[in-house]
Image 1 (cartoon, rainbow, N blue to C red):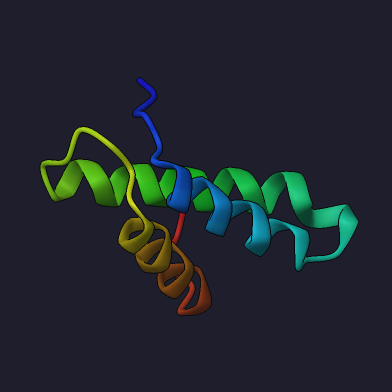
Image 2 (image 1 turned 30 degrees about the horizontal axis):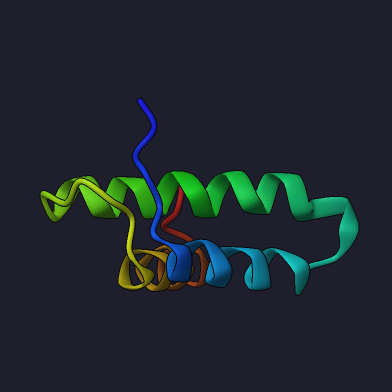
Length: 66
């Protein structure tokens, strides 16, 4: 089930996705989105916030994201 995103979180996600090569954007976007939504749910939040995107990015860097 999808969870709503606040505007700042969506802006950050868009910037991160645009920074990767075109060939991997779709998979990167999905991995970041899934990880951010998972982080929001783990925090008991009803909306993805900027900090959740940062957590997802950190997890991807360390090899731990979806």
